[in-house]
Image (cartoon, rainbow, N blue to C red; front, side):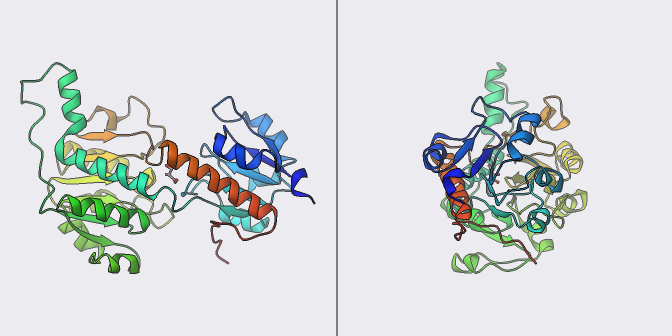
Length: 323
Ligand code: DGY
């Protein structure tokens, strides 16, 4: 079948950069008015879809795939793909692409920004001033230096490695823990430590692990209890790797002095959630990759993944589905 007759369905608004790649090459069905396409419309579109451009955390499981009998590829417009049931895709011979690489610097910048914020009370200071409390030390307190402290990275991949460079500029020592040692970390001369050692040694803990069954609630009450008193905790991976209740308790007791979270469980976080009532946590709404340049690069890579798969070619970034 000629690729120009193939249909690419997008579950939300597609960026101009991806539109420019796809518009004259395939039949496009996108929901440009913003938000997520209504379920009934999506079902109608999926019935004729050869490719699905996946955004807005669409759950892609056997039930959804059953509505898309001609589907050949899912182009996930993010690096994380925990919204996709890979086994269900494999069962239907649907290939999956994602967007590693292009968002590394943007995510590392935000991780480093949150880290700095936990040490130096940047957003807390902002809230303090805007509440009219400048001049009253109470409620703000002192920050801590980064220089000479230890940052423990859990889940050392390309994003962790990019954070290492930023952290070293501030004089932080870095250690890491992964399920397996990472050769890239060896090149960067970052020591590998076991889980216990990371938790008990780090002054700052940065979570970069993928969400999978083995990492759900990895940061639970037992993990927080092992950490140093007054540790600072940052999460830029997925909210579900943290037991939120345990984190709230650790922040309330001061065991965790401050946290910076770009991801939460649940997402979106309700405005009256216990986390939002704590002054020692800074929360950003899952925006680590949200820069104009990075989102464009992610959109282009998603479009390229889809076009390659529709032509039966190797995808620039294909998620390996295990046998
Ligand atoms: C990703 O790509 O998975 C990021 O979490 C999006 O910000």
